[in-house]
Amino acid sequence: MNAIKFLYNHILPKLFELQDSSTWIPIVKDVIKAKKRAIEYLELQQGDTVLVTSIGAGFELDFILQKIGSTGSVVGVDFSEGMLKRAQNKIDKNGWLNVTLLQKDLREYNPIKELNYKVDAVLSNFGYLDESLLYSLINVLKPGGRVAISGAQPLTGTRRLLYPITFVPEMIFGLTWKFLHKMPKHIEIIKTECTEVAINENTFGRYFVTVAGSKKLA
Image (cartoon, rainbow, N blue to C red; front, top):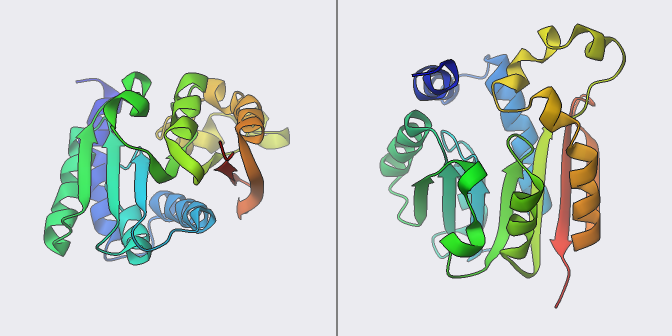
């Protein structure tokens, strides 16, 4: 088992488990704060169907299900067996019957083919996000549906000189130098394919960014 799989299957699930009863874990706490901001941009309503990529341990579910209720539904995708096991434990503990988990590498995932319906909202992040997947995530939305993507911003100044020392927390979530510097192009795709585009660079101390928009009406 390589280092990344070991991290996701054995280390990170434990961190998220600890986070359920604590707020002191910096890495997890910061990621949760960024994701909560992204969820706000989705403007979720009762009964909405939501696709969450890189759902991990499922910490987003609390915030999403509060908004969509028992009449809504969530499909969560992640490559890590360990993280999904943690998410499933959370689902079982809360008795959520409207959440479906799928173990799949995002680089091989096509929501247009995997789902036989359109969704109201998509929540994702910039880690492992390539152009084809981004287009697919937007196209699986209903007309007017919303997408929100969060992640760390490309580094500048001193932070860039010190990379990767200052960036280890985000590297483990797939945000490598290569992926970071694809972000401007991804943002341009969202601007082209969506309306009401919002870019919040203050998601977490000008370090994380959330980009959100509504799919254009047919």
